[in-house]
Length: 64
Picture (cartoon, one colour):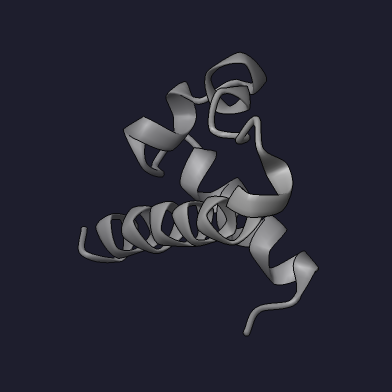
């Protein structure tokens, strides 16, 4: 499990100039639709989606 600071560093690398193009395109507006309207029932699914997205982006970044 990563610490919050480690996740911030990963995101910073992914959004950097030589990082992942998909991550660089994301804004608050594009990501706010990810947040479910039924938070209590969907929170686990939402967190899983975010983690999978981060893992996918990290794998893409590391495979370069």
